[in-house]
Image 1 (cartoon, rainbow, N blue to C red):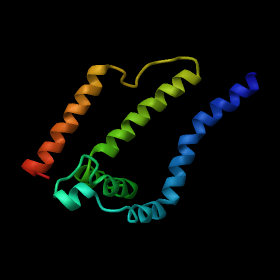
Image 2: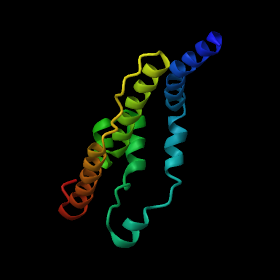
Image 3: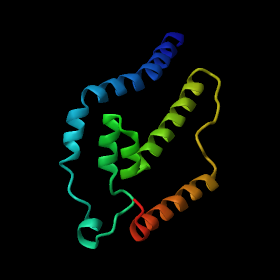
Length: 130
């Protein structure tokens, strides 16, 4: 049983780094795959950006290491990466026996995040500072 636990600990520690290295070496292919997505229907037909508009370009700029341009296109992927990192930190603490809750579970946090997303959607479409 202890030997099995060592493998789990090793896999939890190695997996994200292997994933990052794989994404680094395959970034050109990933960027190319992003060009194959269809255009956003809400922007094409209504000329309104949906909350997901710009995600592909944002991820492409993240893969290139251009964080300011990524945030300019859409901050949601960067926020998603931050939340994944928090969840991973919590997983690491759980696997090593010191369970700390760092991932937000508060309902108010998620409602506030939804409200900020709604405000971002309105500002992006109707005030157009971006």
